[in-house]
Image 1 (cartoon, rainbow, N blue to C red):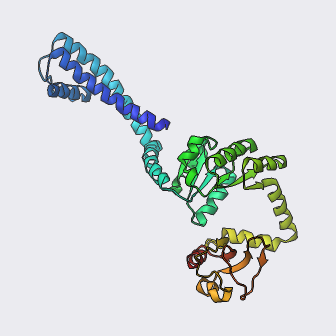
Image 2 (cartoon, rainbow, N blue to C red):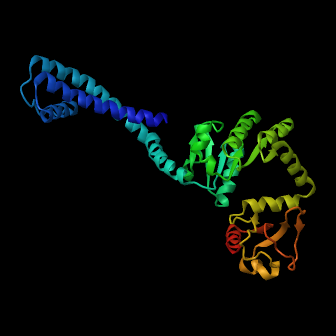
Image 3 (cartoon, rainbow, N blue to C red):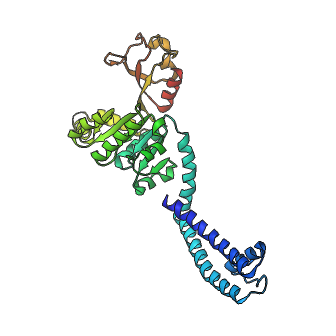
Length: 329
């Protein structure tokens, strides 16, 4: 916004100098608008075509002031615009306009609050699984790391109502709160829940004592970075092959992922067995588990297992396989 304000202020000042020069010649010399505008142009451009009409002493004095003041403004303007182009600020300004139009069109997207180390991994996963999202961070240095990927972002405070509304919080599917401090994430959770009662909120939690506060504030899920880190270290020690499998899966360029797919009432596979549905033959993705309402997970379901309305299937496959299965369902 500072770049935008600076750029348009500069344009207005240049236009103002031109209009002031034109008006000055009209009032002092009594010339027509066209003659005054022409004299102003050749004076500021220093092309030396000569006077449009003979100047009075007052007109010459005004011309001297216009040359000194106008050249200063034009020189500063040229230097500023050149600097903007060299540093990429003007390009970012133009892209900002395009981004604002794209952000307005977002629906069912995700909002990532905080583009630091944790946010970077979330962004990478959303990119890998081809989900639409927008980044919010008030530190422009964090944002700059993703500019070359042509991602949507807003530079601002994620706890501010205006910023979240600009990010389409009312149409978003979920929001990640991954700011460095628990208190900052707590404010984001409170604001997000107030603006969208149905949005899913997942937040980072550093202190164990903060977990209950997040839940009371409206968070659907808290992720303790210390707890996850500890469990991962234990897994690396006692089950290294399994830990390695998960690592390879997440880094696989083909995008092999665990995913969940809901069985809607109008789904073609509702009421059929897994074998009858043909979901394995269609794309090769595997159903790892089924979660029915009010029932615990059914792991490794057999082909004779009936798929019911509102079941959630936990599947394993590539991003493309999962997309095909979702369309089939």
